Image (cartoon, rainbow, N blue to C red; front, top):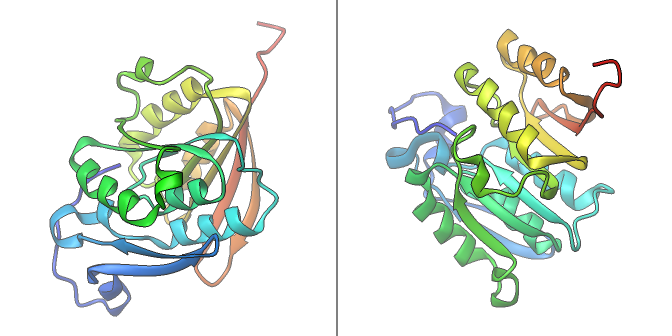
Length: 218
């Protein structure tokens, strides 16, 4: 969601973020994702939450074939790419400065017969939502998009717009700070939320959410 400029780091755990590419094997394909931490910051590196989300999509009972999906805050596009390889029709979104980089990763990693099932599109949460069909998606995906408190309200507004009662939302994230847990509390005002997976090694939670039906007492 946010573009953060590069800062040289001596923390070894962050060194992999400065690699120019990251390689994975999902959906029976080798995937090579370009990274550009120096110029685009957090939007242009693969975070653990995206990897765990892809593992979950590949191994779980989430039905993707033929489904209409949208990825929010896609960054490098890994999650949307894997969802498309697994059979979904995917709109992969991020803010405008990240789109050229995102589009290049999508083009480089999808075979020609799958590329027609993917659209890369600009989406700043809470803005110009009428560009996207209201309640028009079967699945909404987000990996490591819960970290900036200022984005919580527009993110929830965006989810409310995109989701019908049958829509499944999957969010993969770390709970780093109290504000992250506060986001889940905010989300529960409008959605039913449950944790469906936890990767202990990477400390990544996956939450499933779906829209609560309108209250009859209002």
